Length: 117
Image (cartoon, rainbow, N blue to C red; front, side, top):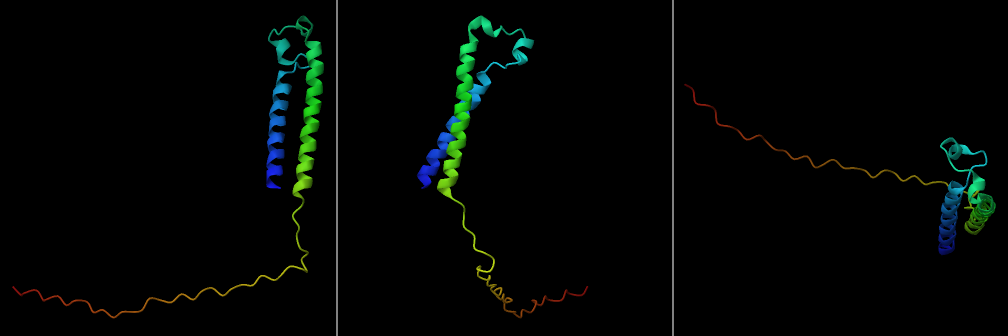
């Protein structure tokens, strides 16, 4: 099941990248920036036929992405959650008792008194 899901996600990514490339390559219908900066007219290079192809490719890739995502959702399914009444109560464990380190009795070393002058 994981390999099918991975394959579907790879196909979604490939289709998404192709969709971005096709959308970026299309001529905007209103002229957009290309006409503002002195772009050539679409009729000059026969762009009308490529626009038909690009528009069909855009719709097709969009539909492919949607179908692949829906298939991946159906395959993975929803995680099941138990109803609140069916859930087991959470048992809280008592925290581990920490013992203090053993007290050691140490006497400070007696220093010899300084000689009187």
